[in-house]
Each structure stands twice: as structure tokens, then as C-alpha cells.
Image 1 (cartoon, rainbow over the protein chains, first blue to last red):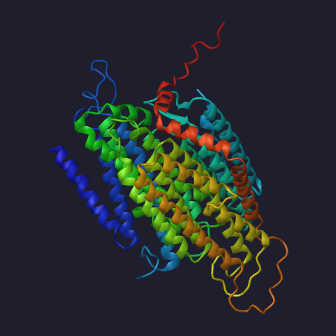
Image 2 (tube, chains in turn green, cyan):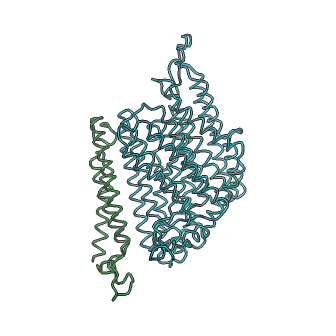
Length: 115
Length: 523
């Protein structure tokens, strides 16, 4: 059940993101890219095979054998954290560019002018 | 552990971080510091090329963790070659920047971003970790966004938005590939990936293959491969010459990443990626080359023409990557060095033309007669003959070597014949485009022929672009006069790529430095 929820969540986020990225206004494109980055972050989590570690913290305990059956995989969490920071920075740059483009060109179309 | 390996990453990072802090009264200091840092990087790159060219692959464990767990850097011959090219282009870019209006308040920021761009490029060439490669890609892209909008005119913002969006989509694809590869193999270290791919159970193969394809698709966007390469010509014609000279290298990063991943994941027989590359990449690379050639014929200004030449050279290189084999990849690497210098030189010429003909810029069909310095025409003539592959310059050696390698070690006589035919026809059309551009730029004058040409302004308005062109030309002439060493070096580099075991052993076999004994100095 968890897997189905996770998979369909990623799918819906990706589909919405792609649709928004293909729209002609910069605001829609930025929101679409944000949704896509959420989908990707969830996918990286899924790649860590959640469920095997059953929510256990990735901190070694003396009474448990050090295998992924007993702990969550810490690496995907580190990857997701890095990816979140990077996509946040990129969204900021893109927003600044979009505002500047609107300010100089007078249009929020991705081509810089109304078609 | 060889500390030399991390210097190309550390020098620009520290310089860039320091320069970003420079205040508005730093004066000429940022540019001087930046130049010193680039010269240091060039020296380190040459030393690395010497060590890697004569000895084994050099590895460095950043953070002192044994390889699959920490992030390791490795310098083999290919990485060292690209480091040298980066440093040369960076130097040319710094020289060309002398033409831009001085901006004392922003000089520190400008040079800081420039150094961070080099940080991303050098890191991407050295890292052995797929996720770290993604991070370095983002660093170099982030710096390139800032460099791209340094020019003038409002047209740059929509183009920059499209460039950023395309690259963010590619980054999302890259991350999906990282997630899939990690999910299948449980590692992101390239050397470790190579070993685990070879030992994968058959049920995991489809997932692993899709991961490799996704990774290659992300790199294809950077390399401007056909269905995803349309962003390049619009982007590259935009920034000032100092930036476009450096941007020539950006497609090469994509090609480097493809070569590296192909070497580690698809060369070993029996692994998940075995035989994946040729059927998918070859048609796309050939189509890229063909379309870019038509692009050079249709270009209306020199920058657009040079941008399409960058795409054409990426297409040619990807043909070599797709075909594979030691001789073909070696010829491709020589072509890479030659075409990078050639395209950068053409951008420098375009920069000079723009400065010498205000109002006309680098448009091919100019109205009225505008005096142009003989040196500009001379640079253009040399650049054009070299890029088209005519004898005196290295382009001839590069193209002849590629054709020879394809015919002798290509994928069978009919396929090789078709590839070579396309390469030669494209070279001929490129020559036509360049010859027409040259005669339009320097000989033809529409109307007003009788009017006396206005006197040449005193003082060179584009001294920086001229110096940059001279530097690039000097490197190119050295390459043309003595291609032997680089041909041998490229051959050895290709050999190293086709036998990734040495790379894998060097990365995984590097031992952490033992911690100093507790209790301070020995008695």
C-alpha cells in the first residue's frame, strides 16, 4: 500500500510538473520545475528502498546487526538534502531571471514577448 | 595519496570564494588574482598530464575515506587533457575580458563567478562519484547562468530563462538516473558501479539499463545532441566574447561525462551496459552533425556560425564516442582539443569584429564599408582553414586521423563508409559556409563603394580579444607543428578508457592516510 501511494504520488507530481513546464508563462514553468524536483526527491527516497529498515534511524546500535534490514539507508537522505538545497537555489535564480525579463520586456511569456 | 589531484578543485574554489568578498575598491586586484589562479591551474594541469601520461591513474580520497564510501577524485589522461584545455580557454577568456568596460565595483564578483565556473568544470573532470558529478554540474551551470547575462540588451533574459529551464530539466533527469542506479547497485562511485554492474542478476538488468540511458540522456543535453540541443545556438551567440570563449568548453563537459560513463559502464563485456551505446547514439550524433552543418550555412552572423560549429564538433565527437574502439576514440580526443581551440578562436574573431564595426557587429551581410584590421581578417582566415580541416593547421591532422581510424577500425565497411562520407560532406559544406562568411565579411561591400572608407580609429578597440586570439592561435600552431605528442597521448588516453580496470583499481585501491599516532610527537 505504501509503495502504491509513493509511486502514484511521484507519478502525479511528475505529470503535473511536465504539463506546467510546457506552458507558456514563466510562473507556470517555475512551479512545474518545483513539482518536478519534489518528484525527483521522492524518487531518490524510494531508491533507498524504504520499508526494509522499517523507519529505524540510521544510527548504529550495539544490539542490532549493522545491515539494511535493521536500519534506514542514510545515503538517499543525504542525497535528497543536497538536491533540495540545489533546486532551491536554482529556483531562486530562475525567479530572479523571470522577474527581470518581465521588468525589461513587459511580458511574462517564455519567449519574452506575446506571440 | 597524490595531493596534486585536488589542487585544480581547490585553487579556483578558494580564489573564487575570496574574490566574492572583494569590496568595490579592490581596483585591479581581482583580475590579477584571477590570472594568477588560472596560471597556477595551468601549471597543475600540465603536471597532472605529465604524471598521468607516464604513470598510473592518480587518485585522491577527499575526506580520507576508503573509496566506495567517501568521495574520491581521480586524474587519468583524459581528465588531465581536459584540465589543460580548460586552463588555456580560461586564460584566453581573461585576456578577452580586457575589452569590456571596466567595472570596479563588480570586478570582484565577476572574477569570483568566473573562478567558480572553473571550479565546477575542473571538479566535473576529476570526480569519480556520480552524485558529486551532479553537484559539480550544478556549480558550473549556476556560474554559467550568471556569466550568460553579463552582456547587454534585453534579449538576453528570455534566452537565459530558456537555458536555465532546459538545464534544470536535464538535472532532474540526471537525478532520476542517480536514484535508479543507486537503487539497483547500492553505490554511486563510478569504479564501484563498474564492478557491481558486472555482477548484477538478470532481473535487475532492465532497470540498470534504463538508469544508464537516463544518465546518458542528461549528458546529451549538455553535449547538445540533436533532439535536446536546440538551446545551444541561441545561447552561445549572446554573451560577450570573454564568456563565449569559455562556453565552448561546456559541451565538452557533456562529452567528457559520456565518455567516462561509457568507459566505466558500457565497455566491459557482459555488464549491464554492454552494447548499449552504438545503436542509440550513432544515428543521433550523425543527425546532429548534419543539422549543425546546415546551421552554419544558414547563419547570418559570425557568432551564430561559430555556435553551429560548436554543435557540429560535438556531433563529430559523439560519432567517435558511439563507434568506440581505441583508434577512433583517440582520433576523437585529438579532434576535441583541435575543435575547442578553433571554435574559441572564431568567437574571439567575432568579438574583434563587433568592436571594430560598431553598428554592424558581426553580421555577415553588412551594409556600407567599414574598415577592418588586417589582423582580424588574418585570424579569421587561419581559424576558417583550421576548422574546415585544410592542411596547414591541426584540423587536417584531426579530420584525417578520424577518417583513417573509422575506415580501419570502424563498425564494418558500409557503416564506416557512410559515416566517413557524411563527415567529409559536412566538412565541405562547413568550408563553403566559412568561405562565404569570410568573403562577405572582408571583401564584399554593398553600396557606397565609391565613398572613401572612414579612417581607421587609432588604438585597438579590441586589444583583449586580439590577445586572446593570439594565445589560442599559438596553442593551435603548436598543436599543428608538433601533433605527435598529443596523438600518442590521445592514443594512450583512449587505451585507458577502454581498459577501465586500471581506473577502477586506482580508485578502489587507494588507501586512506593513517591517522597520526595519538599522544603527539613520537619520543
